[in-house]
Image 1 (spheres, rainbow, N blue to C red):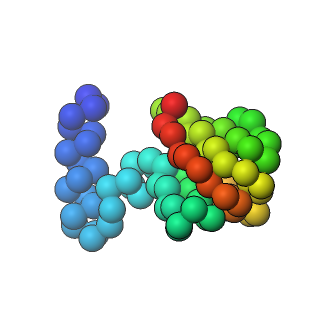
Image 2 (image 1 turned 45 degrees about the vertical axis):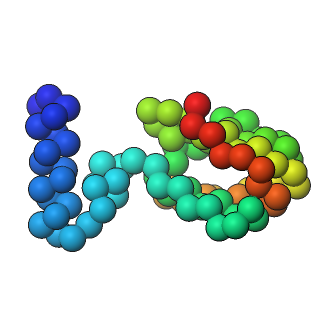
Image 3 (image 1 turned 180 degrees about the vertical axis):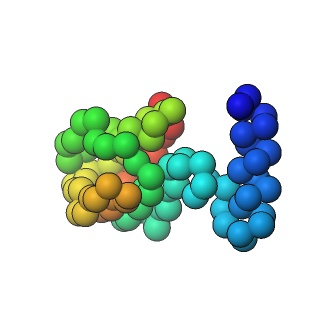
Length: 92
């Protein structure tokens, strides 16, 4: 199935079940709460970890979280939580 047909099918299915398209497509979903908390759903794992920078795999792209006193608070196969003083979130 080509990408346009797949995207159209996902959008129709999402509308039918009143769900966000990203949930059906398995795309990463990021939620930043102030400068102290980042939640990411549908991640593919941690690529590198430090108190000043954390790299996360999002599948087709990566996410770089920069700041100070960063800490991976929780992580399971579906989501993760990073706390600390978050200065930047970049797609790489």
